Image 1 (cartoon, rainbow, N blue to C red):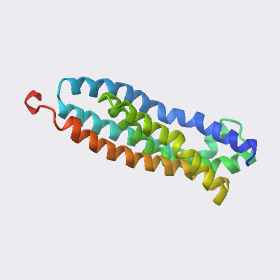
Image 2: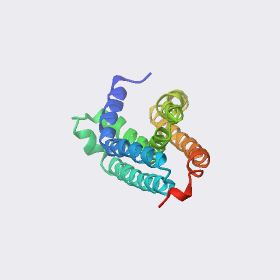
Image 3: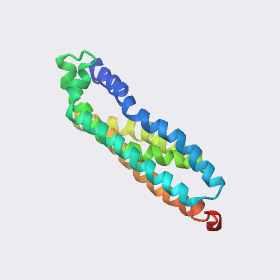
Image 4: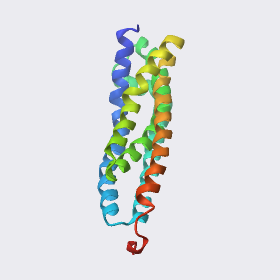
Length: 187
């Protein structure tokens, strides 16, 4: 029900957010190999360390991205020659959606852990939840209930729910797969 301008704002957001997410995605490619290797070698402390450092790094990167989007949305949109109308829609959109970045970072790291521990389906479900299953119905509901500016909250809510689900699943995977590794092989 919204103008093509709202769709353009989302397209600009998607391009901008790739720069924030790219370092986290690159780190996760390495994380899959590190955790997978150490899982095979039964070195659970290294798995815990890699997970902890990756979560911290992802949270810092995503927090910096959130900070950038909160402080300079007009500048970011200006790189795309944003009109006054685009700024009117885009500034609240960038500020709202960026609140989901840290939640997304945690989910992305934990999805990599799931993949490294051979639980790709769990990773798939988290990713589908983040990008399709939750966000689309929430966007529709929020747009009906509150208009365009509320629609952007769908990203924050879906990322927060998926982060909580990811944490719960990580705890389950940790107990079932990592905690049981042979401590004698840690040296």
